[in-house]
Length: 493
Image 1 (cartoon, one colour):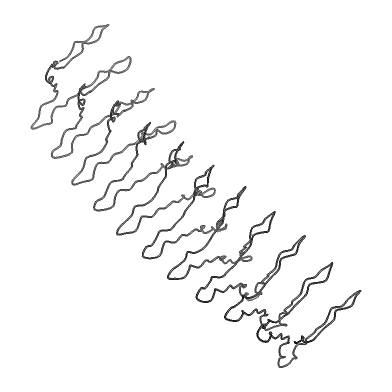
Image 2: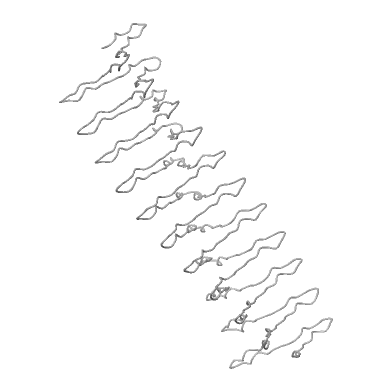
């Protein structure tokens, strides 16, 4: 069935295959198809538009029926069933572009709606009872100029309530693992970098911006999945940085940054390890900096390092140590309180742990043992210098006791096997304008008995020497009297 060819200045006649109209019943169906074949394949049905040499190509339109009272008609395109093999393909594609144009775009869209929801679009593969479900691939073709074409997935916009959700979910594995989800940019070319990945919630005008949550699911018979954030290695320049930063606020406190290990309800909680990587052959390992930010009108933030309390054990230790080295002096530990330009500087307090039912903890300050050819390090307890006021006092003493004796204070020099023994020197302060400082040695008061004894003696002499002499003497004077030496006992009432 065809119309005749057109003349020189007209078009060929159109073909109309149509059933007639109906007033009270259904209009007639129009069926176009090929017959069944028992020893061959069914005949093909082809609908195509002829080619032309001017203007746009002719269109091909398939449309379901319109209804003014109920749902419109369905448009169904289904491939042929293969009862003993694979069913047929459905290919929807635009033709290749010409030498100066682009290939035609494909638009899959539901129509707009005035009083209800617009139609959903579903793309999926069918279920399989003895194989895997068919894959769904959305890919952009490659090109040789300009940036590559992009893939955009965007949920629906709403002008009155929350916008549509976007859900990407791997397939369930009812007898094994669920499927992986991989989001990655392609490898970079010879002269470029790989594309960046951006996970971000949108901005907000009057409410909170959206949260970002990255986590692994709970498990009932295994352990929770690990979360790893790592920067790839490189062969030039510094390594890539990882930055974690909480939110900035222009009106209130900035956001908190919390790093917490996993709870162990029946055992220990997880460790938190913050460490720089080992250094290479010609460098140093990276520094660790724990610091609060600066402040303009208030106090800068406190820095607290400590272990938690324990109800059936002891509190965890806090250790600060410097690693050993094989060249140069050992690394130092420096503890310095805050400097103030208007008031007293900050306090440094070192206090041992309280023992509510027993002794409090000891405080041990010592230098390490010396090596084979050196001396042990010296200990210096000193207040700083002062320009216009008194320098700070140095106080060494034991605390008071209510049901025991006060703790002893002992200053002694270690023994040696060569040369003279080390000296012990007590010297009060020198003054260039008035009298020098007093040196007082007083025994302890005994309010209900005798006061304590003061013993000044040299040690016993060895097998070939004498005991040391005792010298009680005032110093010399240039223009006045030298000081008196007074020995006596106190008065008694």
